[in-house]
Length: 146
Image (cartoon, rainbow, N blue to C red; front, side):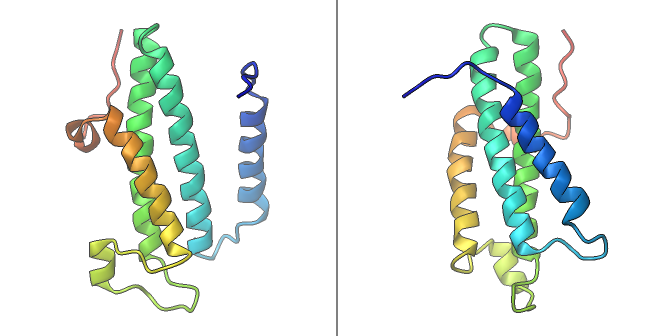
């Protein structure tokens, strides 16, 4: 495995791509589609993995910065949970809405819906390794002053 020197250029490119998509591809009057929510969820999970890696390496060396990254990582996971729930609450491609029971049970509805759930479960395994249930349910933003 090659280790390349860290460069923020790829992150800037990804951010620019999101900005371009937001301002050119997103009709203002249309609700978010399942495909859009799936793509946003994928971005959120990828960003979670990046924050998780940075938190793991930063926190032992620079406590104040690491605590802020830890708090950001928790809030990002909470946002990812909401994106997953929004995906399952959104109308299907055929226009039908999922049943309340399916939404409440957060049941996967088969491919491609299952890939969203698989990604979410895979990320949740990473979350459980580094975050307590209390952290995930706290109302406080987790900002720590040093």
